[in-house]
Image 1 (cartoon, helix red, strand yellow):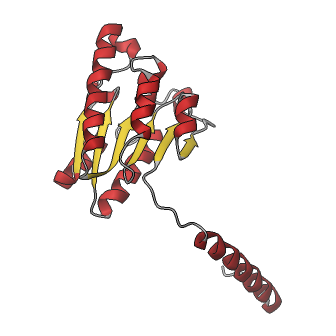
Image 2: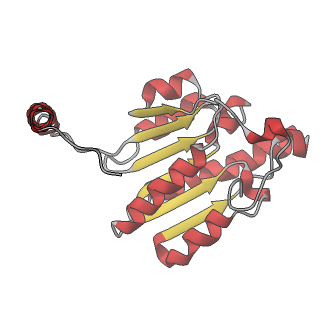
Amino acid sequence: MTKAVDDKDAERHRAKMAKRKSVQDDEVAGKTLEKGLLIVHTGTGKGKSTAAFGLALRMIGRGNRVGIVQFVKGAWHTAERDALEKFGDQVAWYSMGEGFTWETQDLARDVAAAERAWGKAVELMDDPSFSLVILDELNIALRYDYLPLEQVIATLKSRRPDLHVVVTGRNAKPELIEAADLVTHMTLVKHHFAAGVKAQPGIEF
């Protein structure tokens, strides 16, 4: 059913949208800086890594290379890895974690895995062929002090100026939030786990 639109309402709407467009155009015209961004996805809500992989697809669609280092989820097989690796050399994916700390129950092993993953992250960030590097669950490694926070932030700040980096994971450190250009906090409103629904293919992995 199509709602009838009054001519006066249509004109008011047109004038309102024209004014809004003018404001938006002026604001966009004032943004002239271009730089590599440090992006942080954190919070208790679902979707932090998912959002990062969405950016990966956008970057791939532009013909650029993406590097991905997973600090925790290396023990899991994920469908997103299978999908993104179909893009061949445009994607370099390294799953270097061994699961969450409550699964390994071995501090030395967790620290060693985080250090190896950080070494690979630095290697990718130093490679000029990559336009985007995703450090998936780096926030978890920092939360448990597996890596020296000051050193990590200093390296992120000193990366080449055209490189975009995305850091994911709950409990982002205040210092990382301060250093970032863009921070998104995923808020948990409702989660199906609370109703007894298990992790499902295509949704969680």
